Image (cartoon, helix red, strand yellow):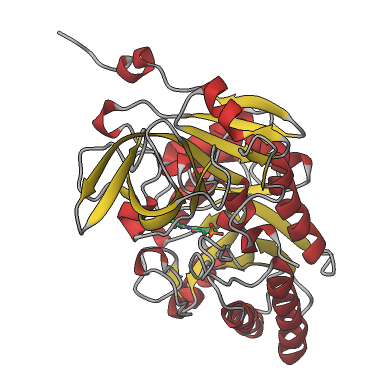
Length: 437
Ligand code: LLP
């Protein structure tokens, strides 16, 4: 059985009797007509399925807390779906916290990550009683302790460490290694614990946190990571007679962007992590910790897709044919930033039509604005609707207004129904902060 993170398309994707792509009983050609393109779409059943799979896979370890890594996709409506299933949030900015609060979600199950939190952000999180901070560096330790002191609070914290675990992933998104801007080097843990226990009386250190990378296709690094974190907890216990009770193993589970990708399922990850907790708590004679996990991409990616309209085309004889869509690198910067691969399908053509290998270009003024190089599509023509799959994570959240092109709207679909969850940006909004004269 395939889980959402192992499938390119949302769970109920099919071709309907009109010959159009249909997901959750919603005809994507009608959807594109109704809301115009480019359009981000979130399939709620796929989103919920993945979240429920996470909950189910880790239910064998009762002390698990799942935090959605908001950076992958932060909108109020998506957050409400995840929050209603019991998830908390990993947030990294005032904006993410504000978006949650605006959606009526408090921060009591959330963790505040990040390597340069501002005083304003720290104070906001303290005022909103965030569950804990994952403290990244010495500067933040001092700032947070002072802020907590001013507010007469004892703040629960984890400390983020770089566990020196290598993952076979893209260099830009590899964060677990020593040469990283994130976290305390593992050799510095004693200095950090000394400071907290002896000096920073307004901090309550309860756990260790690490994130080893993103789009990870192996399970072994997670086994090793739990071992490293529990090993450090053991050393702290021996030296200070102080046992930390929580670990956070970050996110990173990979997804299937193209049929060649073969990530483990969330059940595979859960059993490796739980096994490692069993083995290492025994080995180090420790109590079973509370386990935090912070999935981002794997929770939302395959629930999301983007609809575009094909505009101009250009055939360079003997070389390639370009088809250009009405969006591109500003609504999905991942192909140009990471050479990320995507799959797509013409939404208004029956499969097995005349196939053609084309390159899907965006409309932004940059030669690198290519969404998909050399993909076989069903006879793509001007005016057709193109559906690009797996855009749920790190597309809307990394979108920009390059070329002053308006950001797309986002719609959530379910059981034949569609609901606008992010309005299309307007020209008035585009210039609202401009000061002329
Ligand atoms: N926790 C921490 C501390 C993180 O830094 C991240 C991602 C996550 C959790 C979630 O990781 P995920 O489950 O989504 O892999 N923009 C890049 C991805 C950057 C990931 C940054 N940190 C991309 O589009 O591939």
